[in-house]
Amino acid sequence: MRTPRILAVAGLAIVAARGGPVHAAGGGSYTTYYFSGTVPRVQPHVPAPPRAEDLADLKLKPLVASGDPPSARPGLFAKGDAFFTVGVRHAVTGVLTSEVRAHVWFFADKPLPAGQPVYGIPMSGSNGAGMVWCAPVREARQGVPHWRAICLPKNDDRFAWIEAKPAMMTLNLSWIGGLEHVAGAPAVERRPVDFPPMTLSYAFGGWNRDGWLILDVRLDWGEGPQALHAILVPPGPNGGVDLHLMQGELSVRPSGASGDAAAVEVLSAPRPDAPIAY
Image (cartoon, rainbow, N blue to C red; front, side, top):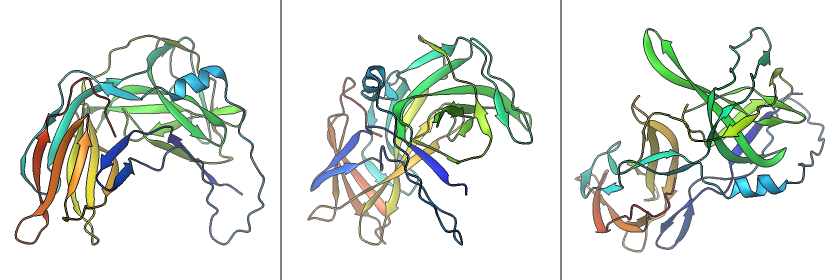
């Protein structure tokens, strides 16, 4: 029986809101889902004990502020409009010191050559926790250049060959356990590399039926904003939400004739040296 495996970014930052902290995502757990109509035979999987270097890696953030300073815009926003942006870069990068090949059913993807730039994401899953390396490659799709990335998470005693979505950052990876999409072990020399400049943004995603604010977190590296995930933030007693982003404070309230827009007020400006939340 094949079951999806899921890796999630470990230690996601928290977006603070009045009434209590709101976690940016589920964060750090491994879940097994069984296909309907099957009778699962549970086989416990004990994650490998973390190594010292893995513990150190888990304290790192995948993205850090870099480039354009944080900008919080006041005003009236429709669904899909961004009201907060900040330039970011990958915090952990390097290059492959040897070629990595995929061994995949029905086809063989192009190998990742020695010298291939990679970025790292601290993740946790069924094999424990540690750094997952992802290799962005610029390709042409219908004649238009775009980026795709292959990530190489630990898969039992081997490594999986998984396409990241979106290419320049992913908050979780999943694959069907037992499928032969395995790869060689990545050997990485950590050092700075050149990737496209990126912008992290928060966009107004609407209000749900219970009055919770929907925040769409997006990343843009020149191909348009790509969805990372959505955050639900509960309202305060007055029906609005107070957000704390990079040590700045924003007030977000329902607005518009039907209450489907958002009025944003910047109570205090974000600080360029503050950690980012996503």
